[in-house]
Length: 334
Length: 275
Image (tube, rainbow over all chains, first blue to last red; front, side):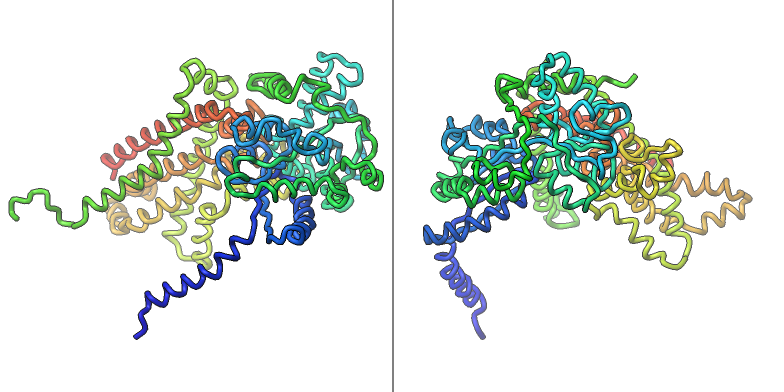
């Protein structure tokens, strides 16, 4: 009779011996990102991994985690061991800094204030643009329905709001005019989805609404997916979305992945990285690459958050804080 | 040995009770206590401001109201379905019977998506209902409908064994003693299934109070109209206001606890009087 426990123990030991050196040699990065970036990071990872492995001689695997930008930030704060965070909005990344897991002054650690790409909010309309929507004032015409997610729960929702607000104040309107405009705008919103993809489903699958205020890159995917049922309209003015990237100091120090994480994010700034970014419909910062894809990125007048508020924190508080501007639009029904 | 008065018929009482208490503490009591602890970081006025805004009150009212409505509908439909499944034999009965459990297994978000798809103006139902002014998606009605779906199996599955255990002789005796069919149903059958009906109602109601996944997809989340309390929690979390979010959660917890406790009392009462 063979001693069964001994055999099992030997098998386990053998597995451990074989697996141990393999595991030690494979570096693993976790990238916590927001929802619509799946396609972008799939392409970036596929390009970066072989390059890094050749340069460093270390096997590398990159795992992705996607979700709402704020949800992801909370997950990292609560212990998700992300090496890099590539979130939609500056305040979400900075919340991790406030929790002590990212070093102060993180924006300055990578070129262009840690912004390898930018994006914006554009209009998606039904085929042939039957309602003749060209500019922000057109979307609040009587009878039109607007689809955009809830600014309280979605990055896309916040950016839509800020874009609408700035479309008034950046063209000479007063804050009172802007308030009136956004208030009117949300009266035309029949459904407040909680996230960007929810709104896309509402607009494309359920065919609700005449115009969808979407991330520029989402808009391109939406057009592809809807097979010609919808098309993009670029408003003359919109918000400059700046999704920052950085590494999470607390996690990379503990896991010994700092160099790899840094190389990973620096790759985004190379010509190859910028090209992948442009192909996924994010606006590259490299002028030459941008020029090459000029057809995808028409010149819009894009204004940053500082044009409409003192800072991101100020904008959050002023517009989206509990009981603040956005909340004031909704009154109890008698 | 004869003096060992604590000795029970079944062995292993202390061990099994120990495990029960350990599980209940680790999985239920401690997480709940953590919630209360977190919320207790707020001063009383802060707590009140976080949980008692007009908007939050509207949300609690909607959650409780829609849960009640759906539980009532489920009791009516559930009794009927359970009766049919127990009392009659017909083809494909087994299939129908297993369909009842589907809401248990289906991710509730799927239910929400499917319902909203069906009831929007271009959906299969919506194209007939919306012209009549019946909005089954992005409305309070939509919330009730999806909660009916979620809570449905609770009533049926609670009633089935009771109906199966019901002795036909009793009904026959009632008939022999001159009761007509309505009298038999109301005075013989109904009292004996009442405790099970109350239990089913309670389970369906409690399940609906906590439902989130399906409701957010079908409600449209409009403040003061179709916004449920868990959406407020998500909104507060987005602002990294953990404590305020927990405060709302604590209020929901209290509502659930009080209603469950009340229903438990009702159940005991009905068992004592009718069981």
